[in-house]
Amino acid sequence: MPYTVLVEEEVRLFLRALDAKSKTVCTKNLAKLSEPYPGRGIGDKERIVVDGEEVYRLHIGRTYTAFYIIEEARKLVRVLELLPIQEAHKKYGF
Figure: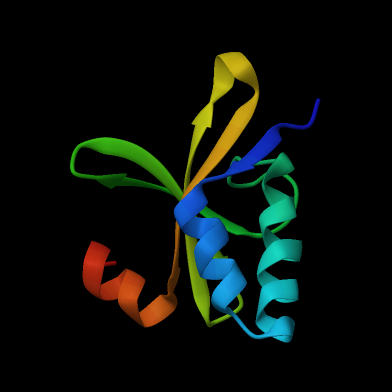
């Protein structure tokens, strides 16, 4: 059963600021999170630990990285952050 993908307001604002092509690429990639676990479905997904919390990341091309959590009981994926890949590397050090 696919998961519902919920995009936080901060991410929606980030998407609105992108050019049309980048917005389309990001939106199509975020849809891949209906199968959110690494190794399932499609997409470059990985489980990481940030400040002691389990978080997942999705690389979107070589340009952006989305960070998300999975609420298994609700079959829900919450996209918390979408950053340019360089900024993501600086912020999270991976």
